[in-house]
Length: 447
Ligand SMILES: [Zn+2]
Image (cartoon, rainbow, N blue to C red):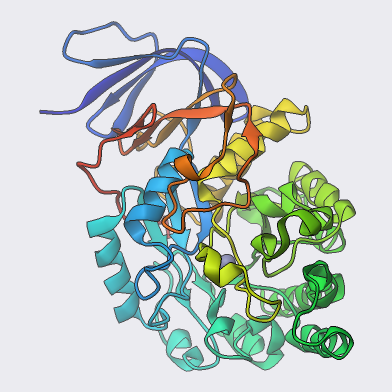
């Protein structure tokens, strides 16, 4: 029987406004927004006093599947995502084997269709090793290409470090190329300097000095210059410095931009003042930088120089994190808490609910040309998130769903809570309980 649900009397946050209405979901789609009459055959959710967002689309995650499933997998991490209101994700190619061919990409889609509770999309990996194959592949139907995380497999794999590879790729490929932007050469010089000073165990607070503003800024500036030369479609992943935000435009709409960027929630939430308290748990690449950078990134997000919010969700075991500087893995789990973090900024009066929906739902759909998702519109997929804006709870080991079982946010009290998450009209998350009877769908793009 068709699944039919009515959400009554809810504040709908969508396309720059908030409207109180009912919403009817039939067969996975939003059938009607407005006044809906009750019918006994429908499941009913009373939305009075609550807010409805389009399901969050997270444009950058590392769910570790296949190959690194001791850290996380498509089932556990998609479950964590859904508890945080995320209904769709795009996963990076640094799983094992690295996703450097269409065959491996298709295998990953197949795996996700069996395991993922949320909707899924995957980047095709690109680096020096598969450059010629990528250039000769029709990539127009892919969500995008990325080199993110591939540098962990082999040094020298960052596109941002290889102008010759960027030139050849940007000249020949018109699909989205999403890059991790740091100049490895500058990072290595800094590593050497601090290694001489401290030996192997460099204090973690030097991480943003080693993975410096200069390393980020110079890489981003050069990548943008080369992209402009070829009118390429460049996306700079996880921006971390205020300086870089000035390299991006806000005078044209997103769908006309050829150069776009994002910020990951942890770079809005933490600053270098947190290294003393949290140590390697907040070691990320690119690094968490200064308080000035944190404030500048939030400003650039609101000013539309930054287009979307992502998580770069990257689980590692605690054992892999709590090691001396050079051995400690970079990255942390955060997909379950991205909406809570953004809503905390709303509570502080720093951002509107409408802007949060724009940056986490609408804009990822525009940027990655995702079909019929990212908005609350009749005829669109019913990917929906209900939040209670007045419900306090504290992150602790008992409520973390990522397989690795820890979070840099442990002990943090949020003032808002995700209560329900629908994926394709199916109520997967209902006040803490999961219905795992269905799987998410592959994200399709408009090309
Ligand atoms: Zn990443």
